[in-house]
View (spheres, rainbow, N blue to C red):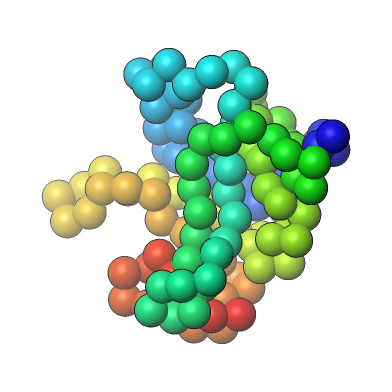
Amino acid sequence: MATTTQAPPIGLTPRALVEVKNIIQEKSVPADYGLRIGVQGGGCSGMSYLLGFDKAKEQDEVYDLDGVQLIMDKKHAMYVLGMEVDFQDGLNARGFTFNNPQAKSTCGCGSSFSA
């Protein structure tokens, strides 16, 4: 079973947290789902970010972030430790952004990185 701990290795800005809560409500996300954050191979810099709703699995860590369950595969923590997720809603861009101190380089779109 997934482990629940209190201090998440990443943060969500207040804007990102409000947007996640809005999506949960608007899309009627089931109560046993949380926000999965992680990484996967691919993207123009080698790795890209995962962000979506999912159920916790055995290899996951689960964090409570102001009432939102944050789910992360234990193996992904080293790639995102200290990362901050923000939400931009401007004329030029709308969506989640990732500020990752573990990234050695990022691509122009900001959705992939190399570690």
